Length: 180
Image 1 (spheres, rainbow, N blue to C red):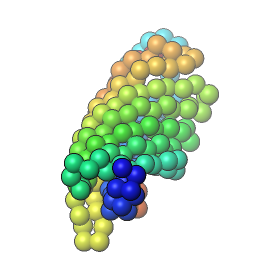
Image 2: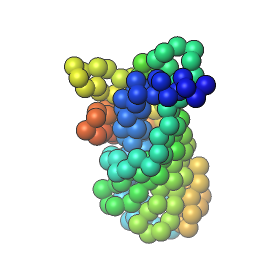
Image 3: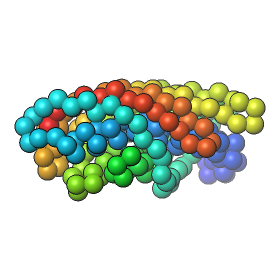
């Protein structure tokens, strides 16, 4: 129903933006990991990879209204986040939400400054609260490392995250432990 999707897409665009901001925070957790792993040894050790990150760029976003109710949105997005050390993470996310509240899940690939890469899988929940003409989106979830390259080839571990997003951007915190 292409006509239907075009008709409701402007109404869902604001929800999609909150989704992007929230998703950005979702993967921030890995930024701390990047800083910690940069100083690690070649032996398998535990690392506290807790930390934060910021969204850099939305690559693509698509909002679909399946038609079962006017406020349901299925959102597919790709974005790039940046960590304090300059490493970048490409996030591939899917959201299913009603009125800005719902679930999110996806994968990410972190390109470390060293040239090595880490992959994660994540899932969580989110809700959006109107704030006058603005909104605030809160989110939380869990993630795990699923692959790596170079010295991170055998990485394992993960953690949980939480954060807040607004039209201006988002912040998030994570608690993480990993070994490689």
